[in-house]
Length: 113
Length: 114
Image 1: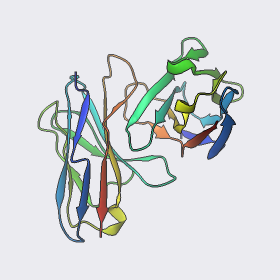
Image 2: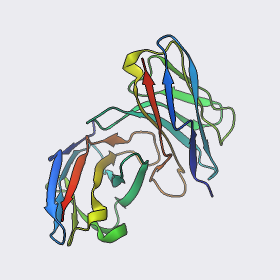
Image 3: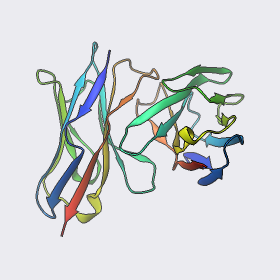
Image 4: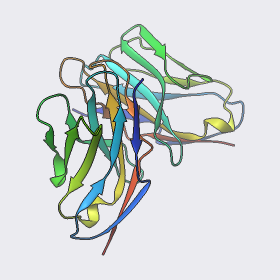
């Protein structure tokens, strides 16, 4: 299994541009998450999904959108990028039935200038 | 409401000496607790987890943690530090099994001195 994969690894955006961060998992996990990690801080939940077609907001959803059309994919969309969205973004997944631990992707480092 | 506090933002130890990373939690229910490690420019990797079974939990790479309900603590220990242990460590609490509610501590950066 590849686990949780994220693309791209790095990206620089100009203010006002848009982009989609891709996340795919091949473990048939029903739960998927997007977090952001700012320097010196823990991870903050942006959005999560409990299954295909179902998404909900986390702690810091403003400026982001998600979709979950398949079990495997959970893309995160940034509209009108702002410097405050400069961060490292992690995608994670877990299975409700096979343990509670989350599996994390390697992260996407995004800079908005 | 659940919360988690990592008491030290930075810890330095000499190679071969014990490691102690402290974590206190607050939870209204029986919590599940996790420790993750993050090496530079990498994702988070699970070290160990407590989910209401044995209170002393053994993880990978010689780490272990003890769940102490009376002290609301879940400290991470290792008898002998190795240079490769230098990383950021996160304590995570979830008090509703199988839901999205995972709360992350702010992390402890472990430095291992030669």
